[in-house]
Image (cartoon, rainbow, N blue to C red):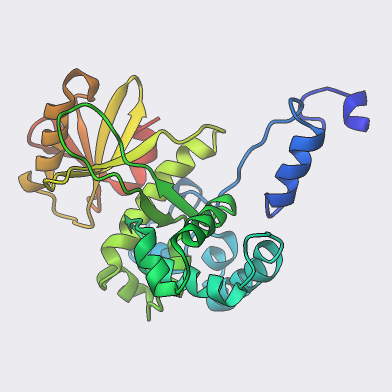
Length: 301
């Protein structure tokens, strides 16, 4: 093999739009001789804009290059992408035999975007078994459509929710699958909070993935009700991050951040972060800050 004849790093580059067979072949023929990097859709730093409708446009069109750069092609591109995904990638997986049932599952999953993942609920809605749902969610993860965010476990003395949270990586897919009627509705409608949360979580995930790192991000929710949208293990500390659609943060938005820092003690960072729609960094009580959501990746590296 020519790769063995020239072991200079970076000499050979292999690309592909799916990883199922590529990963299998790599594991069989190139183990120990290859670096595997993942290339998700655009991150927000690559497409920054000052336009007043910027956020609603991102939630509506998503961050795949084609629909973001050419919004008029949005519906056709996403429809074609999902059709190709189902007919090419999914059909080739042994555990997907009923493509119509899987298509329904993808649509139903979009309605559960940014929610705790409960296989029993989706199994009932889709008419399949719980093991099937778990297997299908793994397919979405493997094909870079979704993120399953694990709960953060610790010994802080609270009973915690153990279910993971489910997110589609791209908000445009969620807007399309949930039939949001417009960009304005995507931001201001019932799905606005979930779409925004998923966008910010996705940006945090990309900030590590683009560096070839496993994203050290989790969420935390106690059965008593206290919750943190993101717990980031970085810089030797636990950084609590809440995500809110508000543009006018107040002291109430710092409560969960303060609760987490009190429970985590010396393990927590001194500053909690509220990622929201403010235009510039704003101080909050308890040594917390509210920041423009697009600045979060820089603060958690």
